[in-house]
Image (cartoon, rainbow over all chains, first blue to last red; front, top):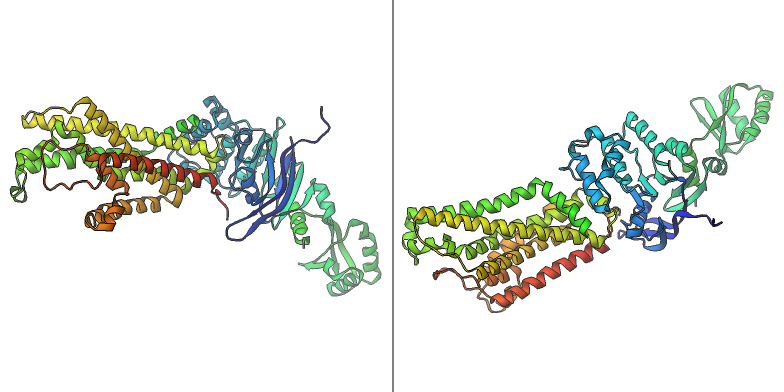
Length: 305
Length: 280
């Protein structure tokens, strides 16, 4: 057994500048370990989909290199081990879901016998004989996942798999994604619903303006971004604000709906409480606010120069 | 490439638009070529009475002895238009539905995907050619039987040559349509551009300027003019003075059409292999 860490996805200095001049991905170094579920996060327009398109061989990088499932992106060697759903699932509207999978199975040289198991896996067996054009967004997304699973791939790339889904569909897709990681499969997932990423991913990469600004476990990212905040409710409010702004930097104090959000760790809670009380301010609420992963990713992105 | 051929074959077979186009071509042959000409000759309208070719001779165009040149002349007009649409639909639809990205992240590389599509188009062209020849032959047989006249079938070698000529020109138009589909990435633009070229660029300008000294030489390079040159090798069994003499000879026509077939294929491949899919 080798000591070296193996990567399902590895990029070095990957960049993409479109013909319009927009630099969508800038010198991206990304490493997704074999067998992990990796969450790819970032605000809209950060370069997530462009990156996933390059990894799938749909876009040519302007510069840099990438290895995906052991091969160059888009090469038959790489595609044989890759299942991907990039952006909206696109299929032939005049074909049924099952026939669409038959077409994809033929392209992939996959046995027809794989079709029913993947339809079952995404819970689409009942609607598989209906035409794709009659499908709801959720069914289209599920068929996209089924198509990505046809090859029983070692690496699965899912771009915004819950995009456009209603709450029920979101819950179903979340359960499906949890199942997909079983069997040692590597999953690279981008999503706008970050609590799902938080629940399912081993590691997370945050991309902003085309560059990777942070990478690590969810806990590591929280710690790196300042992690937590204190929530304080006190009166009189004006006196409390003057006191807090003298105690902390002004940009560490925010007031919304009568609740102060202080960008400091829980270790300072006791000291702040003592000062407020000593100055005659009544403290009616004091607690630690956990930042969501969305807050963390946005904060990390904003911290970039 | 075989995997892609099988996938494209399934898509083509299941698409109603393809069957409708084949039906239009065959119905055109039966109704607007054989049935219409038979009715015109039999009813002898006033406009036909002054014709240089007597009706009793003109009707021989739809007898079995002339079914090859008759089907080839149909292929040069409506056949070409239908094959442009056929080719354009097969490639441009992939962009319209964004399915191009779905198939490109399956196993085959881009060359294999387009190669399979090209092969599927060629197989469809061969089948359409067989159907057109069969329907034309059957219609000719029915006409001569109903008319109570006698006619002979062309020699087997002539039928084989005619079959080859039909496949060649239909394949060129299908490749042209497929190329436009890839170049424009839009079904409407590819079909519109292809039909405007066929009916305005080739048919209209070709007949208006076929005697103009310099333009005549340019016209000799166009696919439609060369298809007519190939069709010139299959003459009707009577002389019709109103028919135009082809600008090029059949050999020139075959070589030029083969060059076009290769050129459209290579250009399509170059664009398809190099172009980004999605984004920017």
